[in-house]
Length: 423
Image 1 (cartoon, helix red, strand yellow):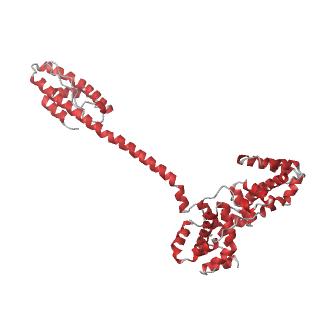
Image 2 (spheres, rainbow, N blue to C red):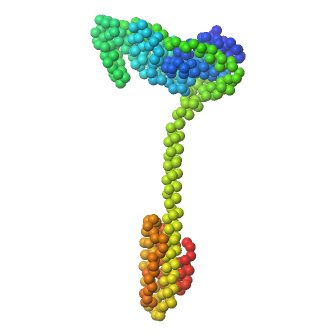
Image 3 (cartoon, helix red, strand yellow):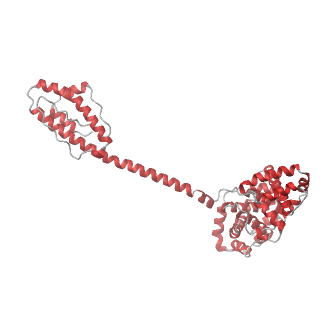
C-alpha cells in the first residue's frame, strides 16, 4: 500500500490500518527511537506513543504523500519530550560483534556529535532524502544539504584514516598515522583531530580517490540497527485497539503539543517536558518570595515594638513636664523673671526633645521602662526637661522664635494639656 492509501485507511477508521502501518514503518521507527534514546524500554514506549498520536492526528496531515516523514517527525517529538541521550546505543556494539570493519565504523560514528549522528543515521541508514529530512528536523532543505555534506565528510575522513591504521594499509602512511592517533584522543580532541585529518585528505590524491569512491561510507551504511525486543508490536496494537485505553490515548495525543499548518509537530511544547523544565525555577522563585516575606515580617514586626517604646517614653516625659510646669507656676513670685526664663526654655526643650526622640527611634531596645526622676526647681529657674514630640516616627524640628514666644505667653495648664494630646 502507498502512503496515501494508508492515510485514507486510518482516516476511515479501518481496524487493520494500524497494523499495516506498523508492518511498514514499525521496525524503522523503533530503530530511530533507539538511536535517540539509547534505551530499549524507553524506545518501545516512544514507539507506542508515536502510533497513538498518529491515529489521533492523522486528519491534520495536509499532504498524505508526506506520511512517512510525518511518522518520523512524531517519533522524534516523543523522543525529545523524553530526553535525547548524548551517547550512542550500548547494544549497537553487540550487533557489530565479530565484524572488525563494522566495529571500526561504529567507533568512528560514535565519536561524532549527537545531532550529526542523528542526521547521518536518517540520511544513510533510513534513506531519507533532503526534503524529508527538512520536514523531520524542521529546517530548510539548504540547511539540511549543508549539514549532511559536512557530517558526511567528517565521517568519511575518520573512517578512511582509522581503516588505514587498523588494516595496515601501506598506500598512505600519513593516513595511518592519523588513524593511530585516533585511539589516543579523548572527547575534547576529536574536533582538532578531524580538522587535521580532513586537511590531509583534501591534499592527498590517494585518500581523496578513496573518499570519492565512497568505500569508507559503505561501512557505515551497512551497520545493522539494534534488535527490537519481542512483544513490541502487540503492545503497540493493543494500546490502539483497547476501548478501555481511550482516555490514555487522548492524554498521549494531547501531550504531543502543537502542530503547524501542515500537520507536523512543532516540538518543545509537551506538557511533561515543560513540567520538568520549570521545576527548579519554580522552587527558586518560591524560595525568593519566602525570603522576602520573612524579611518584611521581621522588619515590620520590630517596628511596632519600637513605636510602642517611643510612645511610652514620650508619655512619661509629658507627665513629667506637666508636674514640673505646675510646681513652677505655683511657686512663681516674679512674673518678669518667670517670663524671661520661659522665653529661653522652649528652644532648649525642643532641641533636647528632638535629640531624645531621635535616639529613641534609633535605639528602641535601650530605652528605660520608667521615666527618670524630675528635680524640683526654684521659681527663678525654668526646668529644661524635654518636651514631648508630636511624632513618634520622626524627630521634631526646633520651634522658631515666634512659636517660642507663643508658648511662653500660654498658661501652664494650657501647655500641659497640649503636650498630653495625642499626635
